[in-house]
Image (cartoon, rainbow, N blue to C red; front, side, top):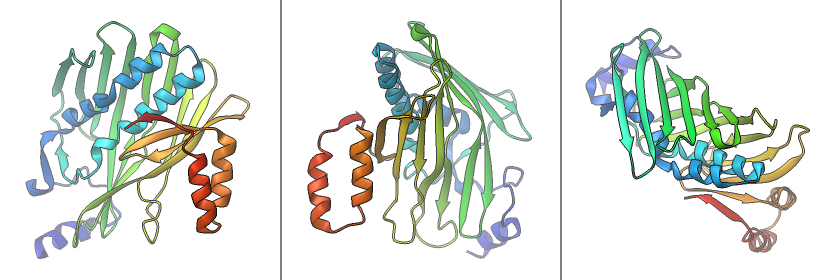
Length: 271
């Protein structure tokens, strides 16, 4: 305990990428390997390519973007920093993609990745600079960098940035992870946007893991609502129904039960 305190507290509120950490805090793989976990739910990209409706494509892309952070749940270990010029290659014929990632900068540590469908139907690429900060009892990872998904069949390009990840109880207690902040996904062809809010845990943990938001057209008209948990699933529902549920969520329990019956008319995007 004394060793941990002596390591961390001089670094309070500072960026940790240049600080040598004990290997006990690492998990046995590099950050380049962790990047390949973005592709765990590649079927959502294939599903988006099969959709003729741009709103449905945005729903699938949003589900893919949320699912990309799901693997971080209960992953409290820090991946090793790759060496400058280090690469990692992965081909998954069963999922229909190939990927290569490379460490392109050492200070600051920037990792770039490029994935594409084996049938030439999509390209997924970006660069990540995981900016780490220590806040006394927690370590915050802000993933700087833009992620891009291109659906070649539809000539569409989507971009977004990931939410902030925070590991709590870094000194004492059980480690736990939360994601918080906004994720704005933009379809640069149609102007549609999906704005998702990853909710912070809050005082009593009521909002832990919750994510919600809307798909909007370029005039900011709500086309559908998305909600769920980034650790479990994401649902799609009519925005008017969702707004009604949110307004009544503060009322009595009996009304909540009635609204739960309404929300059974929903479409699951990923689990």
